[in-house]
Length: 558
Ligand SMILES: *[C@@H]1O[C@H](CO)[C@@H](O)[C@H](O)[C@H]1NC(C)=O
Ligand SMILES: *[C@@H]1O[C@H](CO)[C@@H](O)[C@H](O)[C@H]1NC(C)=O
Image 1 (cartoon, rainbow, N blue to C red):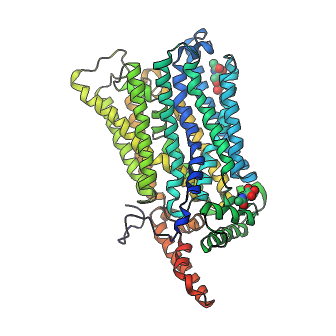
Image 2: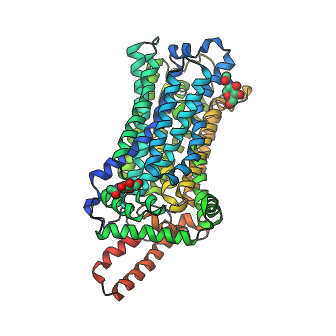
Image 3: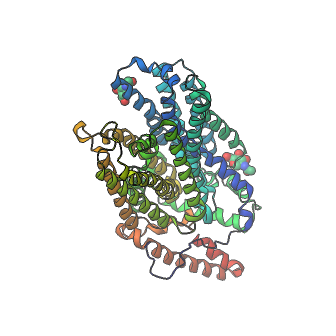
C-alpha cells in the first residue's frame, strides 16, 4: 500500500534507533505534556462557544433578543468565528515570534493574548463590540499554539517517538473539547440557565489553561534547534544535554548537535539571501521545499473540507438532524462524541504513528471517514425528509438506520482523530528544513484556520434545502464523502513516510521528481541513507576510530 513496500520490510517501522535509555526521561515527558497542553486551547474554544450561546443568561448579557432573526444568526456566526479570524493573524504572526524570541518566549507571549482576550470577553457588560474584540484577541493567542507547540515538540523529541510526542498536542485538543462539553453539561444541569456562572465557569477554563501553560513554561528548556539556528551553540548543547538527561560530552548529544549543525550549515549554503525575504525565496524557489509546501497546503484543504471539523463544531445540530431529540440527551451524545475522538487520538499517538507509520495511519483514518460519510449520505438520500421537513417523525422501520447513522458520526470522528487531524500538525511540523520551518508551519496553519473558518461558515448554508440556496443535508454528506475519497487517493500518491527519520535527514525523501516522491521517496531515501552510512563508515575507519561504527550508522539514518 505505502510507497515502495515491495521488499518484505517489517510492517512495524519503529526502528531501533540506538537511543540510550536516559533519553526517555521525565524531563522530556514533562516538556511534552506542558507544551501539549496548548492543544486544549482550540478544543476548549470549539466546545464552549455554542454552549454559551444556548444559555439564556449569555443571551441577556449581549441583549440577543433585541435583534432580528437575521441579525441573530449573523451575531452568532460572528462571535463564533472571531477566534478563527484572530487565529489566522496569530498563525501568520507566530513565525516571526517563533524565530525571533524563541519557542519558549513565544509560548509565554501567546498565553498573555489568550488570557487578556478571555478576560475582555467575560468582563465587559455585554457590549457586542467588546465581545468581538475579546474573542479576536484570544484568537491571536490561540492561533499561535498550532505553530509553536508542534514545532517545539517535533524539535525536542527523539526521532523514534517524535510522532507520539507531537500527537500529544492533538490528544489535548480533544481533552479540551471533552472538558468543555462536560463543563457546559454540568453547569447547565447544576446551575440552571439563569446565572452568569452558567457560561462564565466554563469560559474560565481558558484562563486556567493559559495560566497553567504560562507558569509551566518557566520550567522548560529552549529548543536546541532554535538555539543553533540563532547561533547560540553553547546554550544549545547545555539545553539538549538537560532534555536528553545525558552529560554534554556524551556521544549521543555530540552527534545530535553535530547533525543539527551540519544540516543548518548546508541550509545556510543554499540560502538565497539574508533576512525574512531570503527565507521566503528559499521556501518557494527550491523545488524540494516547494513540494513540501504543496503537501502541507493540500493537506489542510483536503482535511478541512472532508467535513470532520464542522462535524465537531455543529455536532449538536447534526445529531439532531439524524434523530437525537431532547436537549440534555443531545448534549450528552455530543460529550460522548468528544470522548470517542479523544480515545482515537490517544490510540493514534501511542500505537500508530511511530509504529505502523504516518501514511498507513492516515489512510486507515481516511477510509473510516469515507465509509461513514457515504453511509450517512445514503441514509439521508433514503429518508430525504430528515432535517428538511419540520417536525418530521421518523418511521419505526427506519429507526435502526438512524441509529446506524449516529454511530457513523462517531466512526467518522474516530477516523478523523486517527488520521487527518493528527497528521496535519505532525507532518507540517516535521517536513521542513530548520531555516524555513517556522515560516512554512505558519503558512500551513494560516490556511488551516482560513479553511476552517470558510468551512464552518459554509456548512450551515450548505445544509439548507436546495430551494433556499443550499445543497440539502444529503448533498452536504455526499460532498464530504467525495472530498474524503479524493484525499485518500492524494495521500497514497503524494506523501512519503516520515516515521523514524531525524528532522535532519528529511531532505532525502524529496530528491526524486515530484510525481514519484509519494510512492518511491522512501525507497530512494533509504538508498541515500546507505550511501551516507558507507561514507561515514569509510571516514571512521580511515581515522582509525572504528569503535562506534554501528551506532553511527544509526545516527546518520535517523
Ligand atoms: C458580522 O460581521 C460582518 C463582517 O464580517 C459585518 O459586516 C456584520 O455587520 C457583523 N454583524 C453584526 C450583527 O455585528
Ligand atoms: C537554555 O537556553 C536558554 C536560552 O534560551 C538559556 O538562557 C539557558 O541558560 C539554557 N539552559 C541551560 C541549562 O543551559
